[in-house]
Length: 428
Image 1 (cartoon, helix red, strand yellow):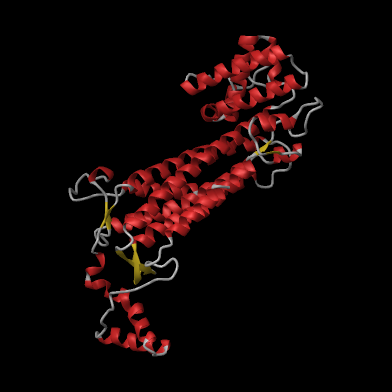
Image 2 (tube, one colour; image 1 turned 90 degrees about the vertical axis):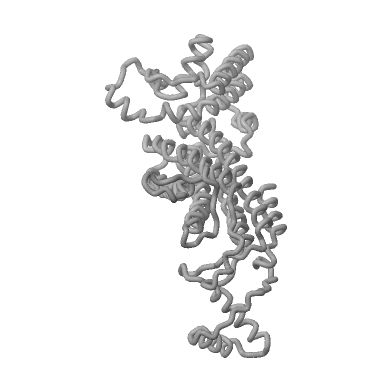
């Protein structure tokens, strides 16, 4: 069944090519089409296009379909083009002519739009929860290990002392920035496009404000052409949000892979979180973090993919837009999985407590030792040259009892301030 069926069928090869993997992806979106269809049915009754009895039976049957979807009993057979045609078929099969009325005053175009935006709102909310869970873990780890020093690097050369407190809380605070992108995407998705029909509205006197409230959208996408133009744009906004999270996770995963190597030996994980080698019995490989790194790098390409699919399309609907679904939906599932695995694994991290006792890290303290000369009255440039000569001729003696007290330094992590900043973002 196709919603555009005119009594003749298309070539099977054309059908396979144009439908693509919509049926598979629509299993994730079907419940949102049901939510929108229920709101639409109530609106049709409110404006007198169908009777109250018809509203009642339509909503009841849609609830039954929703339960089937929740239980995993909803399928989209090859005889159906997508979730929309299958759901309308089920309504018609059960309710006869009443089921055929559900498509009054809407198009598959605004059906897709509203289902996708409801889906994105839900997924972005779940991603925010995943980000917050990882944030809480990182801040707690920062507090727990704040006094354990760690080498800081620039150009992958030993630079200055850092700490596990700084390292963990750096990623925690970075996640706050990522959440701002997620919330911006949510705000764009939180505009009701239903009622824009094929992109030019309807001659029926529908009530779009009613469906906006009924489905829990913050506002209406007023202009019907603008609503249709939002397809691809809202997905791209979501892609920028999840790619920002992915960038942070990828960098953290890279640090972990580096720090786990025997050459660094800063951290380790229990055997059950690592993998081995088929021929080298000593190996503890960070496969989970390598996959997080790779998957998150792949996710960072998604905004560009969507740009290339949708770029320079004129206003109005074009079949190109079907492809945005197969790009954004898997990317959303991937970022959720990466967040979950990062949080799950980091809970078991084991910290090397005595990294800087190794003499090879003595030069980490050159700046702090130099600063002591400045504090005693020596001009900075003279102190710098003096320290350089001491390092060059091998007489450098590091000052290891360092004291950093300014905001955000290793002796003053400002974890309460970082927590407050996150709470302010979440409260929006």
